[in-house]
Image 1 (cartoon, protein in one colour):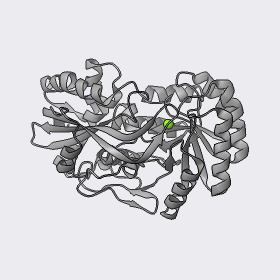
Image 2 (spheres, rainbow, N blue to C red; image 1 turned 90 degrees about the vertical axis):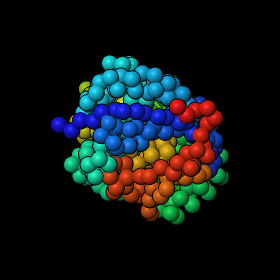
Image 3 (cartoon, rainbow, N blue to C red; image 1 turned 120 degrees about the vertical axis):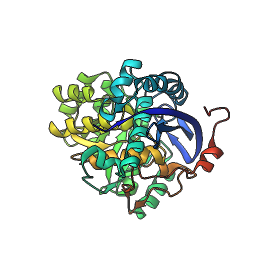
Image 4 (spheres, rainbow, N blue to C red; image 1 turned 180 degrees about the horizontal axis):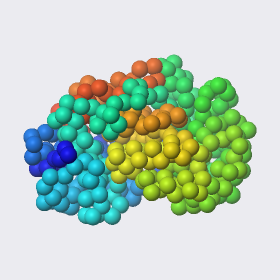
Length: 378
Ligand code: MG
């Protein structure tokens, strides 16, 4: 059994500006906050993890500041007291310390995976699955709820660089106007693009019914999380109703037990797998395995991670048995600056899975210092 001991964890919050505003159903962001987690093991390895929240606590209830407090005041002392720990049991130990807090738990587990990978000289994708099932992953380009002209211009530029699929945020305007926006984008970009829309759980069930019908006639392929996260019956109803459109559960399916529930009730056609919402890489792997084992599609989702969290997601998605819906790991491409010594490699619309030990990335600590939020270091 390979065990580790946690000697120390230090954290720092950074705020990195975006290349453009990104508008969700409920808010717009111009920068992204990250919690950089530096973990030192008793065996002398250093591992890096990342806490994230896509524009604040609206998505998960966890803010970047609560993740920092939870890790420093609760997880670190518990892990120090625990002594030797193996990776499959880390998050279970953290469950005994705090309910929920999946994003904070994922940040700590990520740092431990990086440390162990560095110690063993193996990439995290190999630690997760015995070797990557894929070494590059197609990336769906994602745009916020912006005006049509700027969306079309941006998407055409990105498609010239090799992306072939598009994710559009919905829910920021009334549904009639929203459908017209999507129709205008599809009219401009043509029917051959693979379109996914995501209103982030903002539609009432009745609205979702007619909007999905309209989106179906427009040629949209996927709708992500149309209604509130706890309405699994409603989601199952929409999934049974839709014919050509596939429904992907995001907010409704975070953890392995959520995935099992979704499978039992046939809540959705596919599941968005994410490291942070699952509570770590191993639980994200379990979500993907359950989806595949029960015939659900598997989509590599993002919480708009920095290149650190994106690398971790890439290792997870590389290790999944099936990733039939591709991924949306655009986080680093939306940032106006770089926090790694060597940027992650995107090539012709694909993210190349890092090959080095651990997460396979080196943090540029000068850049971290540059973006550090005042008084955020511990
Ligand atoms: Mg989503």
